[in-house]
Length: 343
Image (cartoon, rainbow, N blue to C red; front, side, top):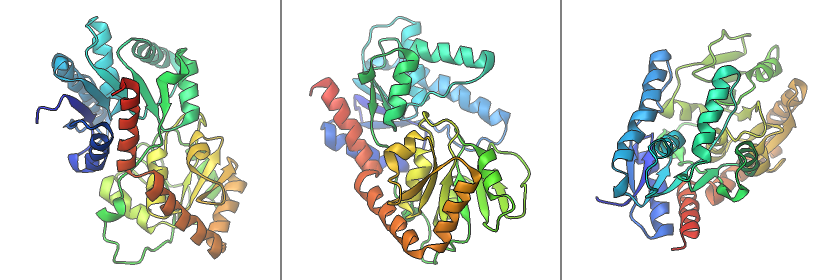
């Protein structure tokens, strides 16, 4: 296939099929996913170095062949960002319409943070990125302010995920015997652990970067759970708790939407741009203050109020099917490109 429209992907082809189908339908164009897997488990520093190498090597290959393409989507945002970096670094003529998908900027501390900010600003303020999409409207405004760019360069598009209930054996009834918190970026693990410590509620934390001993008998921490194994955790949990660190940063959307796809109630702390855009309090989840007592009271409600639990579970799945499938996300991204390019 010699498609002139490509999406730079960091997962496998099967996971992106629905997204590509949505793109094709909404734009009327042929799209080709180009795969370079970089999102595998981060077990050690060597794995991270390999990931960073791919972030720079793979976009360089696309840069060398850039004249072959009309439209480029950075599904993996760093593939698109570093492609734009090469374009600006070598002062080449702009030859593509470039979309950075699901853009997140999380400030870092110290000298590394200053370098990272200048690097991101160098890319963002260049002419090579046409649109940054974000999973949160609040995050769009935050990034616009940080980089002093016009607001309409950042477009809020609700994210989407595949229906991973199809990827596991659902013939057995879910155990629903633990609370799940899963993810990596922008989590306040200290508050979460403090909330559950010395309570009766079993908590399972899945994070490959949280390498601490379990602080009490009811809390277990897993560092080596990815992909299909993680979907089993979603299927068998009672609910999903997300304690957000910085509320203006749009991270955690994949976990939130996967929970909804598995019909799991969500407890999410505020302030959180994800809570603002995806969770309707008392409808598909509970939005609570980031306070241990408040969090555990919400957990108690999930366990004790059967009517509330069933309502939140059913509404979560209905909302997912209506608004947050990966196919729907592909439609939305395609419509955004179509509107911006006027075709």
